[in-house]
Image 1 (tube, one colour):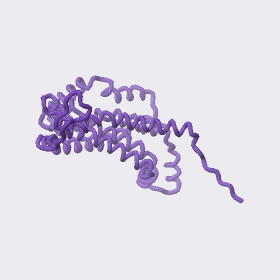
Image 2: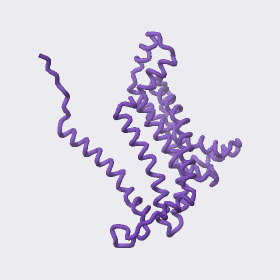
Image 3: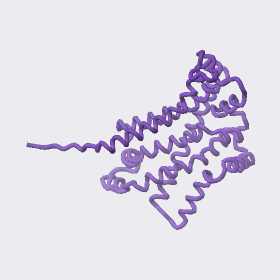
Image 4: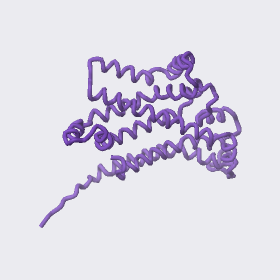
Length: 269
């Protein structure tokens, strides 16, 4: 007779986990509720708890103001930054974790400098460099945002490689696997969760940036955060501002939820 035992999660730990997840979801959802109400509100006067009249005028006005094209530019900018900053951060993180050297703290300090230094100072210095070298505005904008994103991707990947067992790669090579097979079938599956987290952070840098895009882009590249700032500076268009703000907030939240669901279902190792 065979007796099988299943690992049962303690009730206290399960309750704490559910409470933590619920608190995190509430933290994400609560700020969005007023935006949702304003996006459909035609009139919302104090002290009414809910709008008295509803309309879709804000959505049509947001489309007329160029919200779709601005969102497209923000997506492209975020993807470009993620595509460059993620592999750069992965290489830097692997080097720092696997091959420590006497001056590694200095390198780490240099990598974290764009986060520690005020963004305006960093942008002004890099903008002058881009202008003097004649780099096109779009390319300069992407490169400056990559510089801003590399500290995040580097430290995410450094933490991942600190617990990475390089013995798996050595064993695969011993069994005759080529470098390409080791990379595709061993390395990338093991670091996929960290890579997805690093890419998400890099995407957020490009998606949500305002200062760098305004200064380096010279106002010619209108992204979603810039459109939100321009509309919010005027008065009487609360519905339009709410719609554009929702367009800026919801995609990263949905992307984060998709990454979490894929990881939970095993699509991400």
